[in-house]
Image 1: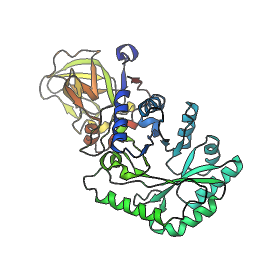
Image 2 (image 1 turned 30 degrees about the vertical axis):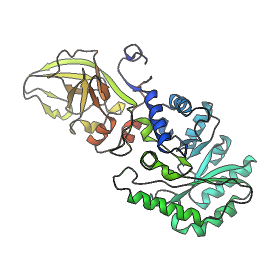
Image 3 (image 1 turned 180 degrees about the horizontal axis):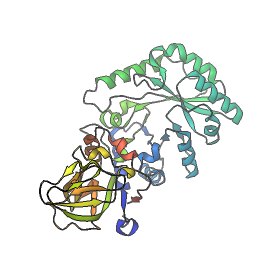
Image 4 (image 1 turned 45 degrees about the vertical axis):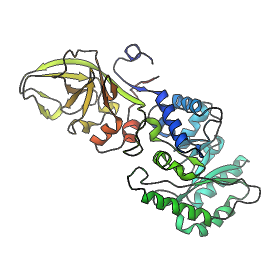
Amino acid sequence: MSDPSNAVSRAWVEVDLGALKANLRRVADAAPGSAIVPMLKADAYGLGVPHVLRAVIEALGPDGPWAIGVAAVSEGEALRALGWAGRVVVFAPTPPGEERRAAAAGLALSISDLEALERWAAAAAEAGRRLSFHLEIDTGMGRAGFPAASAARWGPAVIARSGDLLTWEGCFTHFHSADEPDPAPTEAQVDLFRRAVRALPPEPDGEPRRVLHCANSAAAIRHGGYGMDLVRPGIFLYGGSAGADEMPHAVATLRARVIRVTDAEPGATVGYGATHRAGRAERWATLAIGYGDGVRRALGPAGGQVLVHGRRAPIIGRISMDVTVVDVTEIPGVAPGDVATLFGRDGEGEITVDEVAARVGTISYEILTGLGPRLPRVYR
């Protein structure tokens, strides 16, 4: 690992690429009959696409991933700029007007309605070559996709409007509750998806069979991807749980320097609004990190903690844009220059990203993608 004491002085994110590779291999082992489409959207969940892409390719060996999943045309363009020549599938509906860029970059779009399909066909005609798409079928997520119940009606229209310009490469759906304890809602979505696919017209003569995929991290790990052609792991790769019983290796660690230590007299206050008042003689440490770096301001009143010298120290007062104050009264020897861990491991202590998320009523996805750009990423 790069030595953060030399590389970074204020605060930083450590990214364990070995752990990410191990999580990816675990997904592959859990769904042995399915090819892998790692999701690298949102700058690889805030951890940095260039390094994560290289780790993914190394982890999956000579065949590599079947495709890379993104959510925006610009993200696909960035992958091309990095030299990735394989498939890229854009899994969110594309705003009208971006089709020409997607065609130039050789991306495959997800299609949720006939108007989007017509725009993609027009882009193919302009480009003078066939373009691919994956058709989303809505089985209950509600945010995108053709309605599953009426597949027999819209399926022929998709075939007709694809013509010789487009390759209908795959069909997919997205689960809304795959990480919940009760598998019944997800199984109902799988059944609805399968019935919709059976209602579609067959592939035209000479066309390859459409690949089917439905599984996010939770469905891949817990249900083997339901035996479909592809799985699309996301949060599990980056160290977020895929349900309470499925914990990955931790990938990201958030650390910050102690920049000040002071002895506070009883009655002293700290932070905007003076929401913390010392009830005794206390020792406070100021950390060089705040909500401007992506630390959730709500952690203070939510009982947030950090690790200092491997021990937990409570956050006190309101988190500021650039600094956070913690109570280190019970931790001897804390001095400026020491390192505090906001999530990750320090000695025998550990705070997981899921614990941080739970304290502020959100999910690990939001914690990771919210890490700000002024936090350098240090890779090992």
